[in-house]
Length: 403
Image 1 (cartoon, one colour):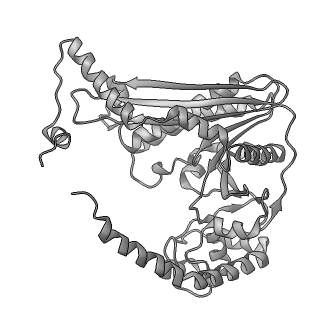
Image 2 (tube, helix red, strand yellow):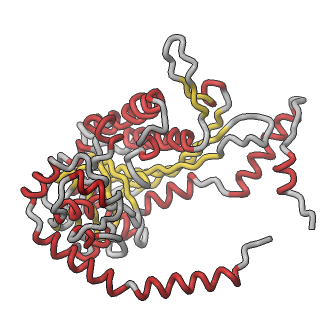
Image 3 (cartoon, one colour):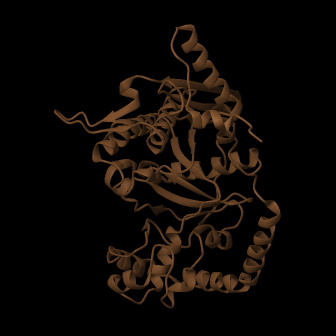
């Protein structure tokens, strides 16, 4: 039976009424949060950050201040924007052969006196034993993890950065380059204790970092700004800085009365329910960016070396976007300025979203019909080679109408 929309619509209406009733309360909390942000002293915040370990929420490091506003610089006369995105077809246990496909799409757009555009889509099929399982490689060790689900997503993320490094290396010489990816630079799926250390070693140390090293090396001969753009970000790291600034208690009391997103203590409960973008929507005028902050993600802090992730927020005129960049970009004011101005330009050309990322997504996406065609091609190839073609009864039942 399909979703009963008649029963669902009443619940949606109830949700909308509750949000309407809470609107004034939220506006008051936002006004108090903005007043606290304006009055926060950076020195006091840094001292509190030194005692932040043990708090149940993640605070970023301060690079500058908390409420700075920065105007965009002018555009270079000639420049390039490179971007990549990816999609994949996961291992399907209902098929007779274990395999997966990663499709990386991208574009290299050249602006200025000699405009040009290069777009591509590169699908790669993986079916060897060494592709299907990630092993520790330690002598005598039998540890292995199947490359499927979230692990396959991580492998795809690395493939996107590797393709981006190739694009930048192939860009017209001498031109400044903005290298863009969609989403976060932090591989959040590797945080916590969900994976054995060798998985982080394979994904980050042997995959991600060499690709980031190549991008940094390319920046030695020309301006290359690597950035990740997060649309409609859900982050609360800067909001958590306000929680820390307002909290009159030590870390032990904080842990007893607060969790990662909410506090029962006054006055730090002022920021309950607020996201970073709510603060910067009030603070930043269209075109402006915030100060830069340092991510305290354990993955970035412990594994990324000189590529440790920094971030700032930018008002594109249509939304507050989050821009993440590695440490070597964040340390160079010229590259930060290049990121700022070219991302604004990309959002203007893309009617609110970076056009290079949007084009890369179009090249990378694997549609529903694509997945069906892929399955049929696999079946046909097996039949041609005299191999059995079969599926599970569960999968068969989903394709069969009984009533």
